[in-house]
Image (cartoon, rainbow, N blue to C red; front, side):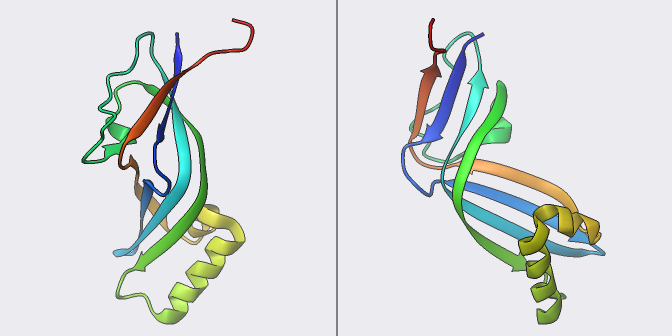
Length: 131
């Protein structure tokens, strides 16, 4: 099986959106990543539109994939209007201390997650040294 690496051609073109729910309240956390990539396993070159004019959600890829890495993200959190400023600050502190584990321990459930690559894509075959 061959291994392929898919990444964006431009910086800040990867969006990760998470939806968290607790007691009918919702938090949406979006991270715009400066760079990142996934590995795809396929004997033949994956059929992916590299012009990617409308965005490519990783969940739509019909191949076996593995996240390579994401780096240097800018985060924007949208809190439910029913959460007070104090509750929002507490949630920010929890995240800063222990990330998503802290929100889960506080009773928040991750109900949806999506990773989308925007703009032109680069697909390259990965070869092992010595082959």
